[in-house]
Length: 134
Image (cartoon, rainbow, N blue to C red):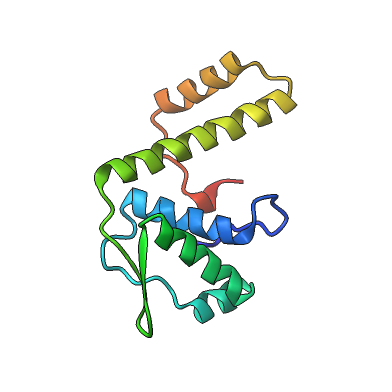
């Protein structure tokens, strides 16, 4: 879930961590009651300051995605379907925006990008997993 954090990104690491958890909840990868890694464990795994993980978890708690239980850990809360739908829609917009920016850098008009996406969808090729993408 946290394998592709980018320390060079203009998005702070705590925001990247929180975004990964939001996506996991929205996609159903994480469900109600699932435990997140402990702050120390995740900080050690990601080689970040524990305060970075704490900030991510606090943001998620403030948004209602997780519950921090003193001495027990951090757990996914029941997230209503409309909230999960909003998160999926927000992520889809971000993905589309990045694709449009990359296409613009190449001088590729939006309609050619859309046609390329349509060709991929029509080819019914398996959707690549994040580890298979360049």
